[in-house]
Image 1 (cartoon, rainbow, N blue to C red):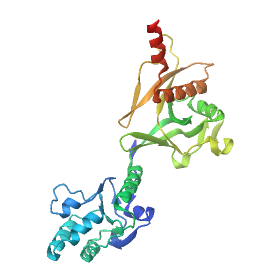
Image 2 (image 1 turned 90 degrees about the vertical axis):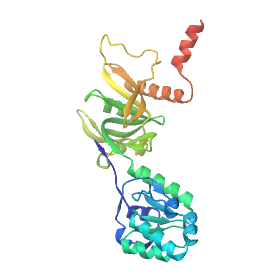
Image 3 (image 1 turned 60 degrees about the vertical axis):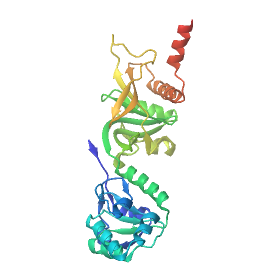
Image 4 (image 1 turned 45 degrees about the horizontal axis):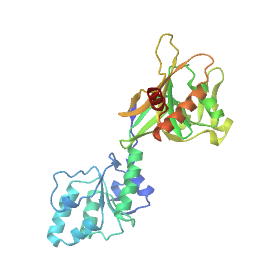
Length: 305
């Protein structure tokens, strides 16, 4: 299941404490893409690739160009601009807005906002905000824990021991992010972040006991609102005769929302301390990211001898 948040122009207005200069009637327009458009080349007359669904940001460069135009040409360019009906226009640096642009934006109901923040800085701030808010979300079943700062996604069949392992990890000083239902958000094209739905946050189900509140039982330090997903662990019942990884030379991956995440499979059988195994897995992952691979080192030592 994949869903997306929605962002209104009103949300941007409130988030960045903007001023509304015209087009108040369109303040509840819905922004659907995170990209930002600075329409410099379009105002110069080239409209072929203009994207009105993007937030339009005008800075000193664009407004200086508009002010340099003859009055009739200025009106023609602004008329053409507003006919494309951009989702919203934001003017940065507190630049003076041409009165004709204010007039036409008001007529078309295009929210025209302004900020005193510099164009480049505001563009970066707004892009980060929209990327985070509009990132696609996938809901999956599993448990997400933070182990030594590494986000570990535990998956496996129902009843395999995911929640019990999470509680044991919490007792060992690590933090629970989500149990059972995890909302995974793809931020940009490089990373995944997981959290729990608001109505299930910090709750965990233990068979035979029921629902417990981890934050209430173990304190605020035992939980975490969200975490990047760095490593996926699949728990499965130990199958006699099946070959499991012994050296750790294979670089297995699991694909989530088009991104490949490091993955390992851990066989489960009575008496095995899964919390300890996951701690070691997280520390080993961290060492690999720092450039050290114990399996490679061990193999090289054997070859040298």
